[in-house]
Image 1 (cartoon, helix red, strand yellow):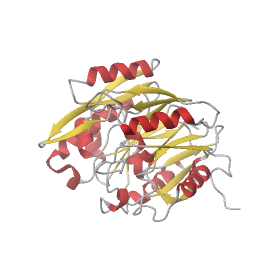
Image 2 (cartoon, helix red, strand yellow):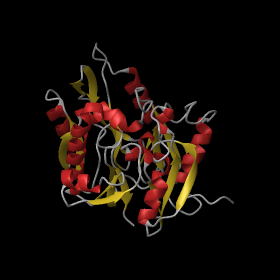
Image 3 (cartoon, helix red, strand yellow):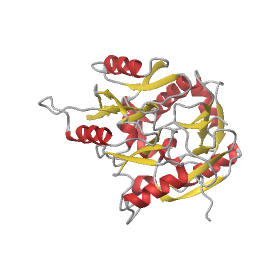
Image 4 (tube, one colour):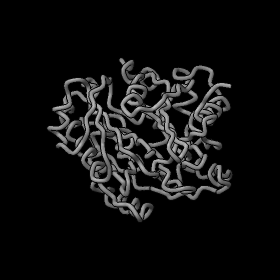
Length: 337
């Protein structure tokens, strides 16, 4: 019998569960950021400092860059130098699974630069295993190419994902939903997989963490968009229909907490959305992106309603969106033992 996290009694905890620390990778790909690289470093530093107010942060930086990280962020973070290609640790970093009482392991997903859109990616493809060595954890290698932003879990057996970045001819030629679900069950320890729809995007082909986050067991914060005539857009309606028609692994109908404000920012003459649902949940906090004065206040107020027991902290989100994501994309939680 092949050993898998599931066979060993391990599963991926929810993001809202307790963390040992948060990992963030320092901006690395100059060709991505161009003349915005220095501002990207300042904005990453703002996210690092926001998360560090709640829990320990481990910053991964290319060899020789540790001093630069401390210069931008201060001495309240831990820096480990590991060769990397890019700075989206949610996608390339370790997925830590746990049995809830003491045993943990890292799941190393196959990584190919988001369907070979960004090269090179060979260092990032080894990042999860390299960090497993840092944390002293064993490694399971999952037989699938995917990214951490492609799925969310509730820690109780339910996984939310989208088809665009998983059933993908470059990442996983010939992969079926049934086979993908089997891999998720074996390597993330889930029982029920819910396939949502996300807008196809430039980089990820529609990661679920651009439209949703799991706020609590049985509760999903979900983007609900509207067409020009005020009707719910087709993507959102199909997601609502799905969630109303199925039950999660605990036998519940998922309660949807709708988030409708949508922000936009213009950089270099192009418009980028501010993905308010691409927020991160450190211990006791919600680190959320902002960048549009027309919608930021309404979005932050809505998040405060969804997370009444957490402190809402705003961080710069416009340039992160230009780069391809938000605070959730540049963070990865390491669950507490």
